[in-house]
Image (cartoon, rainbow, N blue to C red; front, top):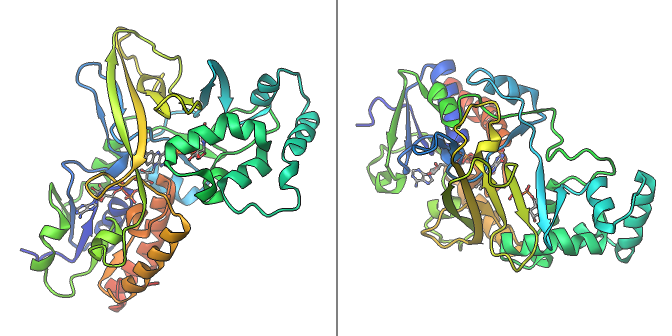
Length: 389
Ligand code: FAD
Ligand code: UDP
């Protein structure tokens, strides 16, 4: 019975949950939030492992970070954050280096003490092949940033494993996510705000969605209900955009990950949360050890949970995690954007709905903006919620 539903939201990840929270609290409208999974939280969902008590992020390590004051203030209404600052190491040929590439990595790799200026000069030398040329893909961009030797050690193999795509066919923006530093600063992120939710990720969603005007239906697939919806019911759709149009314009490329979880009889497997593996001969890209995300918790010391990540390109039945976004994908996506314009009662949002590699803070930030620009005008002035380009 949809007669009491003012807005249907498809997907209980950060995008859908943010819109649901805003609509219920700010507009006092009735929201029906559905997800085909058996839980809220989308890919940010985490659970406390029954055997070890350790919080495990089911869909891969989720590190919260943002430069955005508005998003930070908003999310702090639903959780406090620990002072965890993410640091990553990378194993290459049986040596451990700090990641992202910084003065420590460069000095260790070239086996020399280097000042910042010396390191810059060395890297400029190694990047000379790109001088005066505009990088046209991930490989060229990486070489222009760190030179060929470091690219071949730390980026080429890892990227090929992670994307299952030649780095020369990948867009350059992927690599600019990773800073390069001529200091010994080895923080993974540059953002002003960073931390992990004190009570875990799922608690954030429980607090955001606890409202009498928000009804949640789990294990419900939008496409099994689409034909019975009242005409014109406003919808916020955060599933894959190609699926919405029944793949009529072609399939968008996605990468999925197989997570291989293991509980080990040791209090500490690797001494930190994330170890990347740069060698192409090692089939996984990284190992996560979840206890290290929360050093403030008094977990037992007998057991630890580790997860190995194996990346591959997604088929329809797989979870789509990362948009691959090749040139062809961009063209296909543009055709879906054209089609989305005609769906005036559907607003497409989130990572899957906009085919964009959004971090959590960007998904929340985009949802807060869409609430102001699409959802409020719909309910206060009767404007269409969808139909945007
Ligand atoms: P999602 O969380 O994907 O939610 C979409 C929801 O829609 C899903 O729950 C899905 O089940 C549901 N859905 C889809 N189709 C249907 C349908 N037909 N019917 C019903 N429901 C449907 N971000 C960071 O900031 N830091 C990180 O460290 C980080 N690490 C990540 C690691 C991995 C492996 C992945 C995959 C993502 C990571 N992210 C990280 C990104 C983060 O997960 C996203 O920014 C966030 O999940 C986006 O929220 P969303 O609501 O757009 O999408
Ligand atoms: N990357 C790499 N080696 C590393 C870490 C990252 O080559 O040790 C590259 C890889 O192409 C990756 C990109 O940098 O896709 C961005 O890294 P990030 O950690 O942001 O990727 P994510 O964890 O989101 O997959």
